[in-house]
Image 1 (cartoon, rainbow, N blue to C red):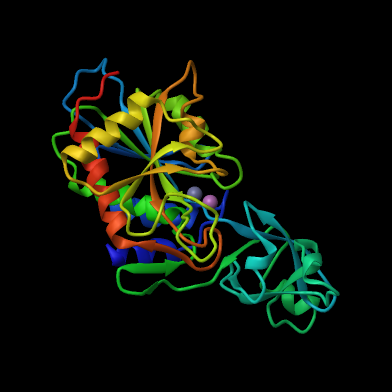
Image 2: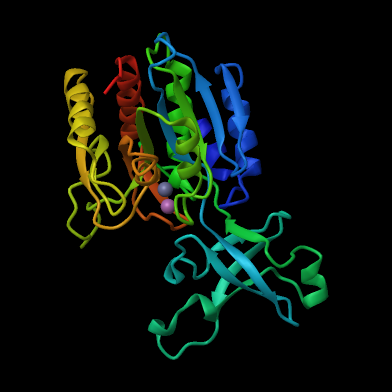
Length: 333
Ligand code: CO
Ligand code: ZN
């Protein structure tokens, strides 16, 4: 598990530029699926056929491949790069962060001289790639390139730290579930979605196309277990989190209760998640066509959208187990 998480989190793939991470995932799932295709939004759609009759609607699983990033907007005469955010990038999480451009060129993020820290804003920040002037910088970067955090994964025992755990950890869960899946009743589409971080775009179009009877997103959620954290009943090591609500979805009791029952019956450690702010692919899936039942299995994660997102391997294993048990069921709502 650790090996695949390392590979996935360290691969380049900001929103709209998922080609490299898509290739890595495609390689992992090849030979396990009945059909693999990529659509126009860049979603990777992987089908594992079930034993049910043709009329039974499929189950759609979604984990987003994309990560947040910094898009270059301007290269100044001294070779410093200005940027805009791709997804939820917080200025305080960027100071001193190391980043890498699609060319492989690395850099660091810093800010102009400020009178007060509260002036810190993306517009006052820049990427320094070590270039001495604009011409030198232009050899490594063009306007519109997206830089991402440059951080190898590290293991702290049960806990792993990496950039882009959001949501490569969800991709890892889907890949593991696919590897272990046999005798599934419903057809199952494993969708590695694009452009979640910029407004849940890939899941929206793929859900429309697949018209599933049930959608399940696997994504990270915040925790309330750090010093002076906002009160939240999710913690690292507390098990797979079954989503009750976030800003994009109020999980249907049909789906939430089914997940809870299955977890209880199979003795899988779980916790209930109410996330005050944030959304996942499930938010787009459940608003598809005339409405689709959808839920979300979340992986508790500290420091979301920082270069040091932390998850607990035991929660990841619990999520794989829960997803596996759900897929053993005959799902026909
Ligand atoms: Co995110
Ligand atoms: Zn996410």
